[in-house]
Every structure is written in structure tokens, then in C-alpha cells.
Length: 341
Ligand SMILES: Nc1ncnc2c1ncn2[C@@H]1O[C@H](COP(=O)(O)OP(=O)(O)OP(=O)(O)O)[C@@H](O)[C@H]1O
Image (cartoon, helix red, strand yellow):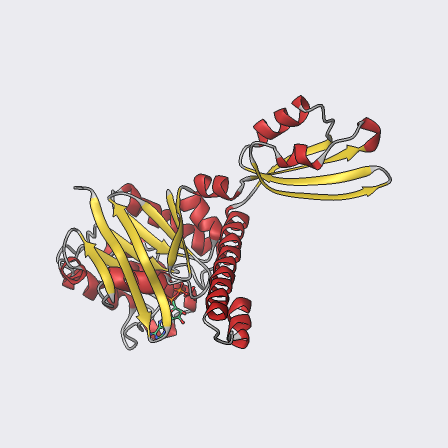
């Protein structure tokens, strides 16, 4: 499609025995601001490296503006701020940013870039005397030194204090408002929640969620309901609770002194509360609370971990059955080690 900026098609990448990216299918479209989330080692940096043509996939293909990633980068259509790679040291900030503006095929004016990146005050400092957060802002200036169509940022706000981080996102938003596509990897889920219009969750090299922050929260069970059930109000079977239409997870404690405490994670709090009353329940002290993206992220990745362990367990059981049928001894030690992973 014409607004396709980048595409991963069934992309896999290994480093020796380590599977960093596995079967990644993904299209980025013009004007999107996309957050890439995932626990340590999930494959975020590797995916960004593949997108920028810094690494080649073992399988599948990556395209940028419909062509090879290197071609898009060399045409000056991509600005990147990566974790790796040092800055030139024995120059001043102004000189370094000027160089970036000059070499860019569609470079911006130096003063404009210094202002947009919020580094006018440190423009005369030597690059090797900067703090970590200031260095990050200079890297950002290099990423926006020209009229890029795509800006790629790998954990851009690491080392920035709260107010600098806020300024950074304000200038980032100006880039997005100018129609640029922005892809950033982050460990700060509140940034993804407030800045991104699309959130991708990577886990062990696989894309396990893709949607708006609201959709991801909904998928994880975005709301929590808690209440008490008092025996004095009449009996309530747990099956009634298990049948609630939005239910994702249920926790019932008690009874203590005739009171059970019920905590529910749900996709649809309104429907659940209505269903409780319809079933003749009398929930006391009813509370409904929203779930943050952070809790949603932990719920989704935790669920995926459980599913992976379950899949491995089932594979091993099947292998054991085949081994027994074939009269081979089962390799219990390896199995239990793998199951514990
Ligand atoms: N050059 C490399 N050689 C060998 N293994 C690597 C290399 N680069 C990354 N890996 C491994 O590949 C996996 C994915 O790493 P990657 O850096 O892409 O993850 P990440 O999501 O960016 O992690 P983090 O949040 O910690 O930065 C990890 O297990 C990592 O140890």
C-alpha cells in the first residue's frame, strides 16, 4: 500500500543459539507514532537494527519505503537514535550538529535543530563533557537534523530527568505533527501510553500484541472490580462469577466471618456488574478501577510465558509417549530443565 513506510515479512534473526527475532510480521504506516515494548532481551534493538539495514535477517525480508533498508537510510529518509555507537568527542555540540545538518541530503537549518532538540543552552559545550541526559538530547538532534520521513529511537529517554523527558516528548510530538513516522523502543510504559498511537509488544522475539494502548489494556483485562459477598445476603455459587461476560481472571478469598472478598480482572466492567445484579448477587463495597499499561504489559507477557511453558510441557509429554512406544528411555533430566525455563 502507498502509505507503507516499513515492512517486516516473516523475519527471523539468530545470534548463534539465541533466537532474537522470530517470524516477525509487521507493517508501519505513514504518520504513525509507534512504541515498541518488551522485556530485556525481547528483540527490540535487533528489530530496529534490521529495519535500518544494520543487520541482515536469516529468514524473511525487511523493506523500507518499498526498497532495501540501506537505500532508504542512504537517501536521508531515516533519522535514528540508537543505544550503540559513541559521539565524536573533541568537538562542540554546535559543530557536531552542524556537520549532521550539512551532510544530510535534506538538512535543516542548524539553529532550528538546536531549538527543536532543546539544546541551545549547551551548544557551546564540548561533547565529551556532557551528562548522560544531555548526550541523549544531542543524539536526538542528530536524528532530526534533516527532513526524515521516519525517526527511529532506541530507548531515547534513558538518563533524562523528568523535566527533560517532558521537553523531549514535546519536541518528538512536533516531529509527529509534521507528518513523520516515529518508532521508539522504551521500557517506560507511561511514555508508550501517553505518546504512542500504536503499541507493539515483543516477547522472546515474537510480536504478541499490536494495537492502541487502550486495545492492549482491554485485551489484558483493562479493569479491576472488587467487592464483598456477605453470606447474610444469600448464597452465591462461584460458577456465577466464572460466567461473568468480561471475566479475564478471578480471585476469591474467604469466607472469613461469613464474608468473601472477590477480585476480578475484566474486559467489560459494566457488563459484569449488570450480570452480577441480574444473577441476584448483592456486591458490597463495589469498586471499579482502571488498569495501567504497565499492568496490562505484565499480564500479557506473563500469560505468554505460562503458555510457552505449557506448550513445552505438552511437547515433552508427547515425546515421552513416543519414546515409550519405541522402547527408548525418556531423557527426564533435560526435560525438567527445559520445563523450568
Ligand atoms: N550481537 C549479539 N550477539 C549475540 N547475541 C545477541 C547480540 N545482540 C543481541 N543478542 C541477544 O539477542 C536477544 C535479543 O536482544 P536485543 O538487544 O534485540 O533485545 P532488547 O529487547 O533490545 O533488549 P533490552 O531491552 O535489554 O535492550 C538477547 O537474548 C540478546 O542477548
